[in-house]
Image 1 (tube, rainbow, N blue to C red):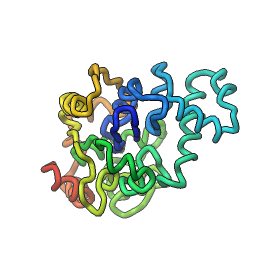
Image 2 (image 1 turned 180 degrees about the vertical axis):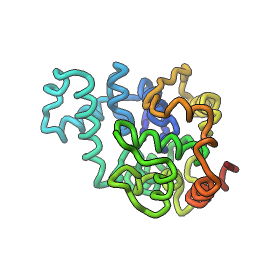
Image 3 (image 1 turned 60 degrees about the vertical axis):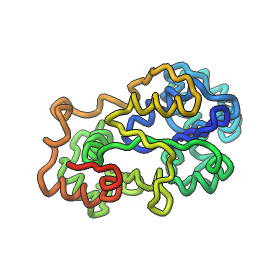
Image 4 (image 1 turned 45 degrees about the vertical axis):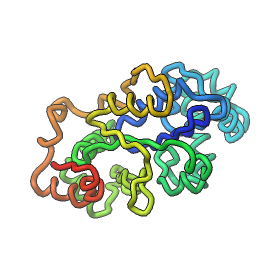
Length: 253
């Protein structure tokens, strides 16, 4: 999530919609007072300077130890800043500040919410769930099967922390009382054109650069398309879980 006072926009970061890549790209245009909560390690990894506000607030939360963390390399520095900002905004934005519900963002930043352009990216929920599954099982020696993961998602079983029960649904991240609160919704399937359009609307001279943040976790056979991962039962479960989002944007299996 990003709040830019310089360009008067709020980027609402939906999960598994290239949000980290978008946040990193946009971070290059932020002013000193702008707040970036999403993709801080990835931004640091690209050697993009963080805003003065982010560094100042993170340093205060980290007991003014950021200069020490910086000496330990970009990877550790990025993680320390991200964790510090995360903890600073949890009391206001909830457990996952980078993916804060729209209602909490509105309550925490009422002036910006009322006056700035809000936008986000959405993705076909069947495709998004496959992407999320591979992200959640990366590094696990004996991961659950995809059908086990989907059934657990429906049953409210975290499978010992693998299934992101509290934040798997993007719908609350850009809606308030089931009404879309974003002024512009970009489809993941048309990401570049959508970003170009929105940045033009907000007067940001975006150059089209988009890093490939958080990619490479989906196995080769799944890159052919998400359909191959599903049985009719699994497809039906996803349709039930994300019925509001599917209906709002005409997504189908």
